[in-house]
Length: 139
Image (cartoon, rainbow, N blue to C red; front, side, top):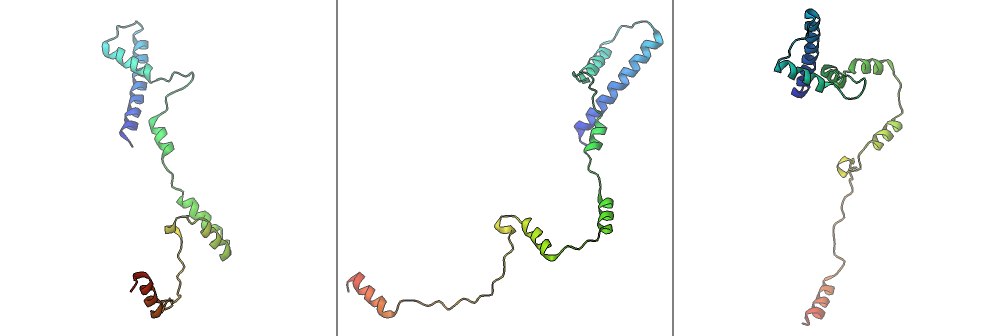
């Protein structure tokens, strides 16, 4: 749990406890009491925690955390996978895998080519080189 989430939960708990204690004291004595500086600060803090919208109640931090917590679906998934035994043709499987491949070059499967390279030879003969040398350099 994050520290902010825990702090928020403690503030909500303290506010609800303070309001319960204040109600209990007021009912017990029956007479209004002078509030101390701390009591007034707690009361104002409790008012600040309330939302301004009508009917809105501050959410419990613990409930929010549990709602966002990821659930483990492994058992249900395994049960479903073992109960359903349908065979899919290989062509369909390959088509799905091909569609899910990325477009980057690193995601592409490289087909191995076993073509032998031909021996690289020159198109020009030695006479052609000599002729070029004579024309170009003038010798």
